[in-house]
Image (spheres, rainbow, N blue to C red):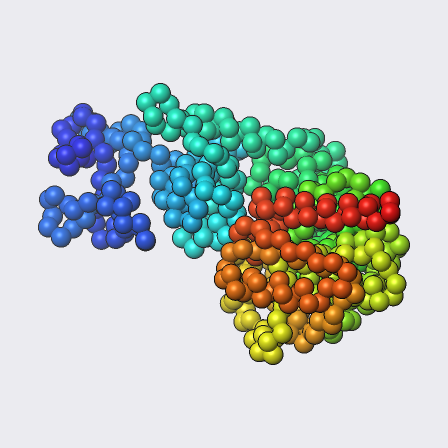
Length: 507
């Protein structure tokens, strides 16, 4: 028991508990400042070190230690001790974050959550941030929510006002859960428990949208597996997207919906008014979950659909080429092609969307626009030769980087997605872009490319546009345009293209 000068305190006097011995760690990896603060030279044993525990205690007259509390922000969450200063230090190491505060919100042990309150220079890719934290923090101590602020609230003394922060975080979490309702039968109760365990969100209602309360594409895969195991039925991942509430999932389970109908690859994000439609084609990973945020940003009157790759579900065969995918997907969206249509896709999805638009335009459709989301291309013969497959380690890294952690997902599922991803990469390498008679819009990610590379890509697609061309830059990297505030810029571009259809009809 030592005082602030690292001197022993007498019995009955409060001091900080220091821990020594062979079991003491050497420090915090990559955090020299925090290590210097927490690990000190042992003033009594040369060459030894002590760990400042942050526990305040005193010796009783009988020699027992009496715990008096903490002198820092180390807390417990679900029985696990968290060092908030370490979590904050990890957050502050992420590019773009200026300052952060980690805190526990919730008034009982059952509904407590770890929230990261951050001030950043601009939009931050939360998926990249999660991957950054996952390299040094266990999943048990990862923030379950992020609160982005222009500035941290301060007390009159200029210190961070944690009480005000907790209030803001509580309000933010409450706004994400506005459809609370209790389960009404054993099916909804079982689903409720699965959601609660998977999302670590204690207050879930039967009408809460899975993707509004922390659900990700990887979490949806895990959920499909858990529901299938609980009810002894195969649940395709797209069922989660089409039935994103406990109430809707319960209805699907009660009606015993046929597996055939559930496994269709066309997903309806929103039906709209039936006059204007946006169809989003999957990237190389095969799922269309990445377009959820974009669908929410578009007007309610616009129909928004996603096309997922064959091969996602057990027993499905993949299409052999981009051209074959375009043919198959056009058959699936045939009822939508009689109205003005935007075909869009991220990266590889843009190539398939381009081929679909090429075929529609060649068949005489005039109100079709293809919007390419950071879709790469080059006339350099070596460009496509460098598009190869990835190994499993790199693929798993991509799962963490773009979709969050994947513990609990069956190896067979990961293996299936791995082969599908590489299949689509090979299809990308084999595809040649023929000149297109219709309109092309290119939206480019600014980050990760030189000015020359950005210009060359614009020129590549401009040479293929026959009926108008537009290019637009957005801030951030490849995935930021769909997973950050930049999605609003993308939706603005789509809105403008939809308005062009109105202008054409008026002429």
